[in-house]
Image (cartoon, rainbow, N blue to C red; front, top):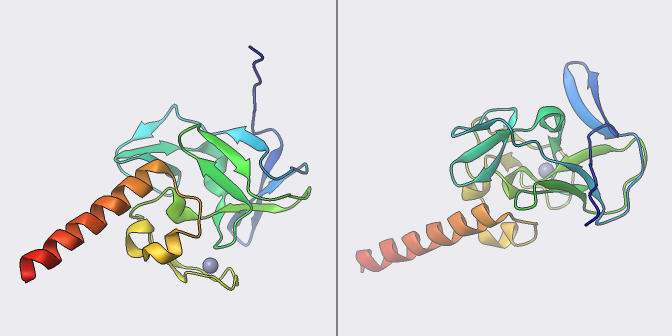
Length: 163
Ligand SMILES: [Zn+2]
């Protein structure tokens, strides 16, 4: 089997007025794997350097912690394969961003999004605070999908119990 090592050497962190962005030093085609996601440093609570990869599993992602949120992102974090993938063609020098609720169920530090996308969700607090109709338009990782279904089932049970 051919083995490929995909490092983060093609990525750079830019800091402007204390605002960090992650930019790519090379172009990518839609669907291409950009890098692997680090998973050496696992914890059970989220913080601003982590990405959620399971129900109660969060990993420090190193350089990828500089990835900003966008409601119309250009990359996907696939927490099953543990890789970052180009969601569309990306040009050299472009800022990379992903849809935070695609990995985060309940964020430690919610914020207001000003990405300007026509489908902007405005309040970025995690998947549990978004309607299914919004989530359906995005790539969702298995743990988010699972928790969303569970939440819906609980809500239905609860509504039944009120009748
Ligand atoms: Zn937005």
